Image (cartoon, rainbow, N blue to C red; front, side, top):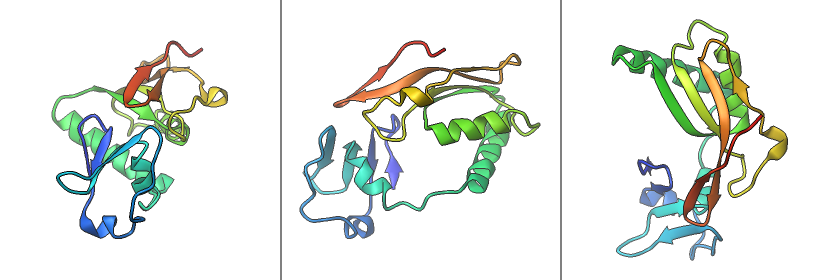
Length: 153
């Protein structure tokens, strides 16, 4: 599977296509590209694919984050934005930000676990005094557009 640079579409192989229903169901807020060939899923249609993916556990995610930060630091980068972190990942970020392995200033936007929803009960702002982690906005999807909602307290 390959993600498009804006993470609004994915391209999958025939082996993954073989795991899906044929024909593809109509998915509100999503698009399945079938011409010139099958294999591209956009926005809500990506959920068909994501439910088939293995889910990394907290340990694996921690390893991925730490490796990515080391590589980014090696290139001289000290800050990044994550425009779509689900609540579980934000909880992991909060825990990791208290460790020496958290070496990047991160500005993250909350994305609800279920796309095209607003999970108000999980929209909690984070503003660390050391500047290493901030969450002050929510990423929302409306049709094929991405909206950034305002300020979270």
